[in-house]
Image (cartoon, rainbow, N blue to C red; front, side, top):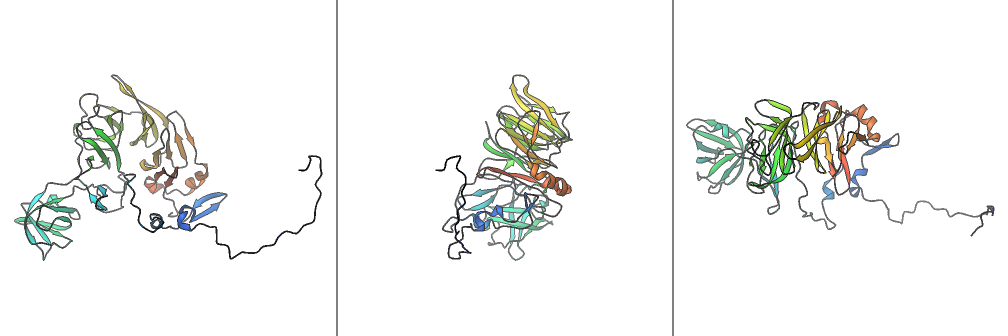
Length: 402
């Protein structure tokens, strides 16, 4: 070991020369094992996504190439720009997706015509079989299943023409069509899971346009019978201290800045007990999201953030506005990570801890968002919290089509 005062003495030497060794296997991972590193570019030292694609299908196999049979970890919102919207669940027993959409009134099948692919029911029932809807036949002799309605006309009976072939000529059973949601990609689905003292453990979902649906784990979904006067729907919902809280409540008129909460443990009772209703007069814009973090609930409006705190007693909830002029991107751009809420705006990403200050954390993204965000479709942007990888991804539309 050299002493500190020893000076460096140069020494001649020869260093080994090596070219490309083509005999040693590459140490680089196959791209499918690191798909997020593909389709990127570096600008001013910042890594950015560029137009491109990667195959997710190769990531859902195990080492032997067999599909993984893992449990469902989340219920997600799947929407299309146009077409029919359903509520579905994954059936682990049959390895299939089942339609659990609330159904209209069923009618007894009186005539079956296999040649014209027509079911007939008595009376004028055209309103119960919309064109393009999915009709469920049950209790029949060989015709049970789902059929897509092509047309329905009323003469002496209602004749329903379907796309699929009809297997059996026997006319019996019941034909029931789904009571579909009428929303499109702008009507965001919000859902929450909770335990009602009467209904049990249920999933409640709303699209802010049609009636709120509930599902108890089997069969089809049903209407959540909220007993507010002239209640139509709500845009967002969540649970705090055993109360179902609805935001942006619509009755005979739209109350965009109104929240309502149910009686304790009874998610359909909004008139008696500990239920209540309040207008957030200082909220800037319509309420777009109720989201739990810790023991409180954040109320996101289009341009402000408030907080609901449970205080008990006569007041029950204390509600205050904390931050204004937020310019939140949209309902789906908000996500929580336990004690914090993260959200994207038109120009940045912020972290909110319930105080009167939201801290910006999106400096690497700020310039790109400000310069290239597609403002016309910014409401379609959404956040995905990847719990396994411990990261949050925001997928937002840009002017260049990416």
